Image 1 (cartoon, rainbow, N blue to C red):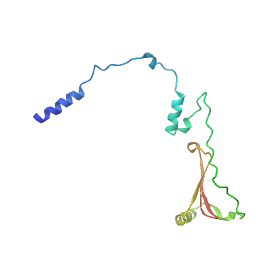
Image 2 (image 1 turned 120 degrees about the vertical axis):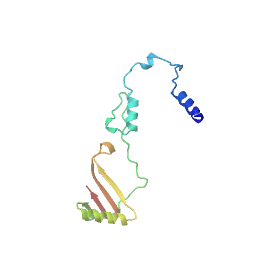
Image 3 (image 1 turned 90 degrees about the vertical axis):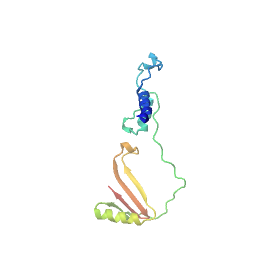
Image 4 (image 1 turned 30 degrees about the vertical axis):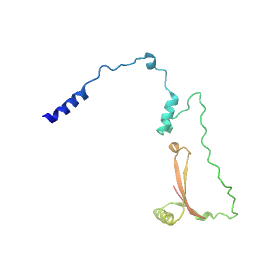
Length: 140
């Protein structure tokens, strides 16, 4: 019983309500002044609710980011492109072959084909894979 006395005192202290806490009341801070559209937009961007984001009146809409310019100038090699080497994956056999090629490749390149650069608004058209000069496939 003696060992429970300290626990009982602590329990009593934890459930005792403090009724001497000062509360500052300012009626003006409670007045509704309309929605805070900037805060709403920031929250929607943070939560990635892109379809709910609307322009804030009085603010300029941000232009979409331009892709970064290449660091080196790429010059055409003068070689013609063999269009027969670029194919569409249309069967399970094609897909199995593609997986084997990509698994064996030292380096691969992936390109996502979509209807928009905005991830949340885009429809996926296909994914293109390349793993060497003249070797590419597109999955749709």
